[in-house]
Length: 172
Image 1 (cartoon, rainbow, N blue to C red):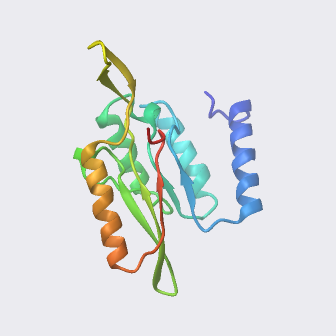
Image 2 (spheres, one colour):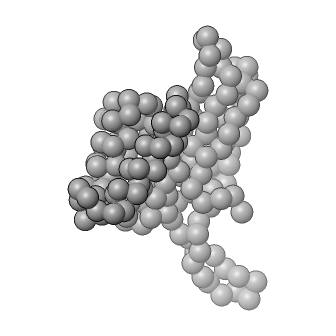
């Protein structure tokens, strides 16, 4: 219901994003996750409609709340986003999560920088020093770190001197 016409949360979100876009005039919009609670297709679709209305490419990643419904729900959202005219989302290797991809930024056909967007998942089980198991926010996996290294190496080989990593959950 937060996406119902006139709902205060929708008004705040739309006003804030519109102001940011009008003031900065971006060439690309990045979204670092938690767009909605997993499985709330209406919210995902209305958000995508709103962002597409600016006619600016956008590159989202999923956050922990997007991930909470499991990989099937995330995959459903990803498939829908990939059909959007301005959305750059790529699913990537499903072993690494959903939405590990690179957006190369070029100027006059020269690679000048890149964005590496990576899924930091939801929660995972850890064991503390006393041997007790607990659940906490997840992080990038060792396989994702290797993927990251490979991408950076490939970008360097192609002349890229600068890149930025965008995740939902900060690196610990």
